[in-house]
Amino acid sequence: MNILSVESSCDETAVAIVRDGREVLTDCIASQVDLHRLYGGVVPEIASRKHIEAIYGLADQALINTGLTRDDIDAVAVTYAPGLIGAVLVGVNFAKAAAFAMDKPLIPVHHIRGHIAYPDLEPPFLRLVVSGGHTMIVNVLDYTKMEILGTSLDDAAGECFDKVARVLGMPYPGGAALDKMAQTGNEHTYSLPRSKPGENPYNMSFSGLKTAALNLIHHAEQLGEEIRIPDLCAAFSAAVSDTLVPRVELAIRETGCKKIAVAGGVAANSRIRRDILAAAEKLGAQVYMPPLKLCGDNGAMIGAQAYYEYLAGNVADMSLNAYATKSILGEAL
Ligand code: KG4
Ligand code: ZN
Image 1 (cartoon, rainbow, N blue to C red):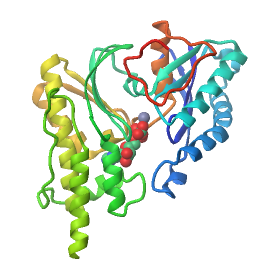
Image 2 (cartoon, rainbow, N blue to C red; image 1 turned 45 degrees about the horizontal axis):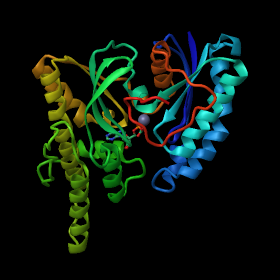
Image 3 (cartoon, rainbow, N blue to C red; image 1 turned 180 degrees about the vertical axis):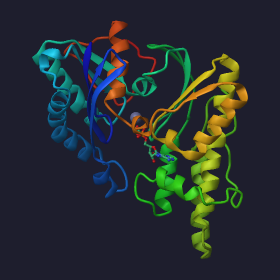
Image 4 (cartoon, rainbow, N blue to C red; image 1 turned 90 degrees about the vertical axis):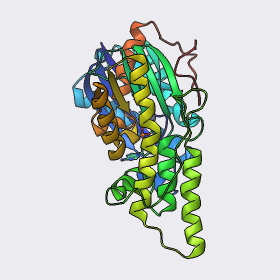
């Protein structure tokens, strides 16, 4: 089954063709990140406009790359939630029009379920999703059956990386630059708080850490003191990792599941990768790290998940709407 899949929930327009949820025939992406960098973050109106400009060309490109024609496409899938509402709507409207014109099923896919889809891994497995918009630990029981163990109660981890990086003068999105800077730093120069376990030991908080780091920078500026940027970056990365990794360890222990996969842009962080690998080794668990290319947003992840949504009977009609927020557990449309 060839699924043409569309993703436009944030600042990446993507169209892929995926066969049977496993084989990525093509994965076309137009990133807007250079444009949004000028403004220090994603500007929703610009994102919507750029998605409209890119989406038709990408769909054509996907067909050209694979040598397939419209007749070879068996279904159209699309991210319908969550994301910037204007941006998600562009993809949803395009996918509805394409499905209608080709008279093919329309499969709505939750963006985070897309991040959870992992081509080489069969459930059950644990999934740590850490991106610019989401931070959660999910117990994936089956392809369309999952349980959220815990989430960030405030900011996403990537959002905090980007905010601290921005105040340190790094261009948006600064997570990767901060990571690089951290590698030459001493994490013990500065002391930053760790998120304490609350009622649900899997839940976490990053806003206190972010505020502490920003206060430290502003305070030094006021006193005319120089910040040792690599040291602060190292201390910050360590604090984020110390918040995430013990919860992953707890999940492995409590569920008894020995497979853990990591997704989202922050999964590229070298400190987090190192700590998760060490924790998993200690517990005899296997870690699955997607290639860096598949850590960020892409169409292939939507096409992979769409196959299992289709098999579970999750198809939509022309009344499908876009949603800025929606639970990953997927209530009725
Ligand atoms: O998953 P993603 O590409 O987009 C969504 O948010 O859906 O994640 C982007 C986030 C940004 O916040 C970016 O700064 C962060 O991932 N990121 C990193 C690293 N590489 C990307 N954060 C920390 N360390 C990195 N190496
Ligand atoms: Zn994403």
